Image (tube, rainbow, N blue to C red; front, side, top):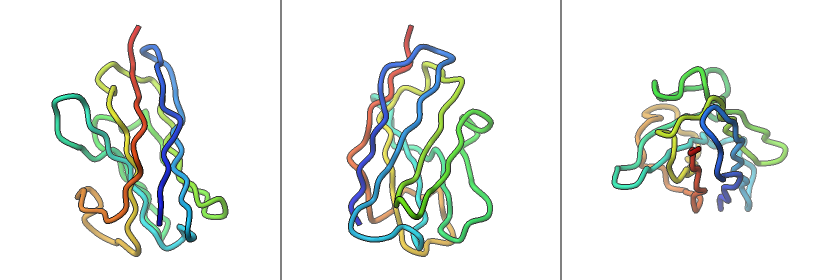
Amino acid sequence: VQLQASGGGLVQPGGSLRLSCAASGRSISTYTMGWFRQAPGKGREFVSVIPWSGGSTYYADSVKGRFAISRDNAKSTVYLQMSSLKPEDTAVYYCAADRLRSYHYMNDNYPYWGQGTQVTVSS
């Protein structure tokens, strides 16, 4: 599956952005979809995940209550709605996919990755 992330940009602190990750080549209905980010000079970190099986979604503590992940299987797209953005949210955001992953959601050993989209939070 090929992933294309979009929706990044420059936003002021307190603002909002919605990232999209469109998959091509096949349906994402059996794929666990995740978002990770990498800030300058730092390692890649988990942001959020939505399992293929539905049910609970998961978030890093640093974004809990501010970000919301969702999926539209008919459009083969996963979204990350980001609100109350902070300067420390500045990073390149990557979407990732793994077929039928049902555990270790926060590990970044997903086999499929998008190209990343830059989010900059600054006044």
